[in-house]
Picture 1 (spheres, rainbow, N blue to C red):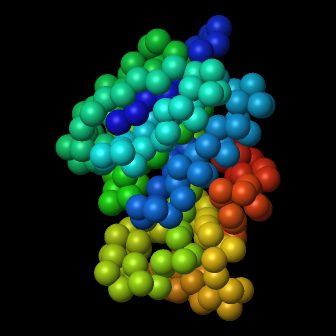
Picture 2: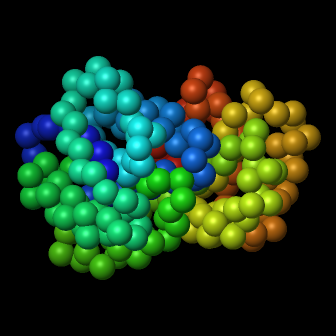
Length: 211
């Protein structure tokens, strides 16, 4: 689990959480980095909790280039074996950094509903709004659906916004088909079609989280 902290002078505030979830390789980290840029530019005191397995987490050099400190806590998925670690990390951030925004990126096999359940137990931390973005890999969705449909349904079920990523790799017809499948899960919320690496259709994404 990687913890990235942006330091500012502060007074006690509520912590809003933004969870960015989705299957491995869907583009969660690209979405995370774009959101960091947008949120920090707006002056929010921000922290990032990154649950990585192996070397699949946020690139430390990229984050260091933003002038931030990186702390790493190794372990498994924050939704299961590292649940206690997630709680301890949030407590640490509240006590030492007091962020206004905490961005959370679980591993690709995680059910973000478990993160939501965990943070709801932490009433003493003054956690505010929790927003969940689910990132869908447009290029591999149809194949992934056949193997991981149960997990995909669980992820989409708790989504506030679904992001269909890698739109440059598929036709409009394929994107329409993907959205149609997602709507059958069922899901009635907003669906945005993006290219996270290039920032296409990412403008105002932080406003979807009420920022």
